[in-house]
Image: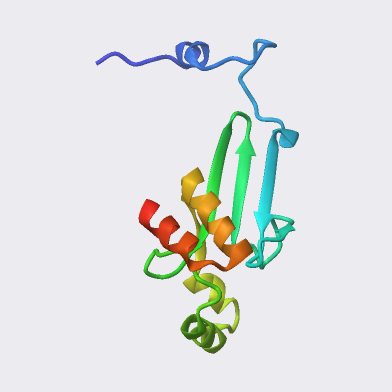
Length: 128
């Protein structure tokens, strides 16, 4: 088995137009985040329920999921009671977290948060 030298490895990597290694500029990253009411907020807001991040040409979609990896329903009474019980020292963030998803699930979940029509949540869960 032959070893690849560092020089060969550097030459085989993608190059930017200037000839150096490709780097992502900080302003190439854009993020759109939404609260449980479907209102747009900053990414660092603790009330973010879903977000879309564009990095260069790629877009990744993130939605809030519960411990069973199902989409989080903020309007469910049982979950609200459970959330109140566990909401100490970031307990909510430990139990519920953002995870990657597809654009279709993202769009359906956002539509659910805006309208509170459970048909959109059901369809988003089916698309997973």
